[in-house]
Length: 420
Image 1: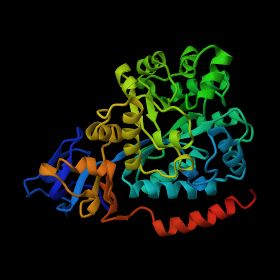
Image 2: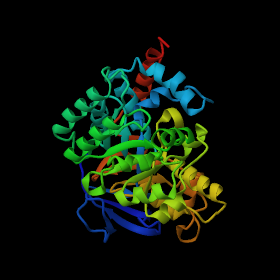
Image 3: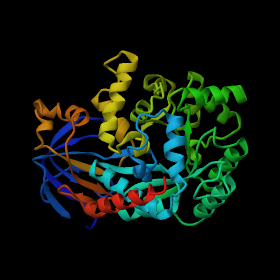
Image 4: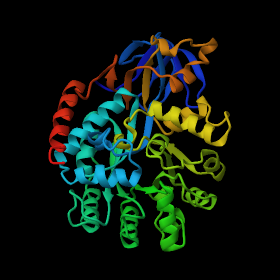
């Protein structure tokens, strides 16, 4: 469907700050909105009487193709899960499997209201291609580790050379770009971390890394370097400041206040992944109030479907709100408006939600219950608009055939696990 301004009538609209408005609105190509007078030249008129209009979700930490690994290794702690369930099967990973897994992930994200993903997985060119095909936005970060992988049998040097080659080319599209995904301080040597940082600086691209996900990672780093992971990364000059492309630090479940100040000083994005941390029993989740007090830019992410079982950011928003209240014994933390801002921060796209769903009732006086109902209960995504283009309309995704993708995923998983 073509791009352009759409008029949506008699609808409820959630503004970026979380307040709810009622009326007729124009949703513009550039991501802005305005009140409609009813006589504008528009691409399409939508009856919004049974729709709620909001910004789209932004998923800041994913391993999309790991939909292939969903529900594998249930009940295992993180390192055992990786070493006995994930790493063995990934020895047989191919570009074809990555394509199928990524397409299934993207289909799930569209159907649950997400239009952006910061991904870290093998065959980043394939990941980027699927994002372009789907009409979504994203940063495809190729993972760098010192040990050999199916994609890079020679290890970190080969992975860095591949990313350098991709970054020297043109961006996959105006909505999709490449980044560098140094996996972690325990899988990358100081030399590899610095090479990746220098490369990111040269290409002005995002650096994406797992940081302080587990207590063991933190303890091992301190034992080896006399510093905690974020301190260590800062000491070697790893971080890319916001104006230089920026750094995405996923998890940050075991960080000190000093480390929080380091993150804030570099303008790094600290990504809260509450469901994954809880499911793998990491024992610690990000302290949102402390991060906020330190001035850190906090984002929200699902992690991969292998450790979450879902890429649904609506559910992740609920988990973030509840775990922060629970951990800090404070029901005032991450109320609906702030939770929504955290989950949609930076979005320029629009999603409409089904208000005929009984889960969204009662709406409340002036629609004041709509946002809490959406976050804590949920409903179906009706429409998704990216840059004024419809990628989903009336509950059906237009850019991906969900039935075909489902069938391809089933057959691919059967083949992927055949030798395991």
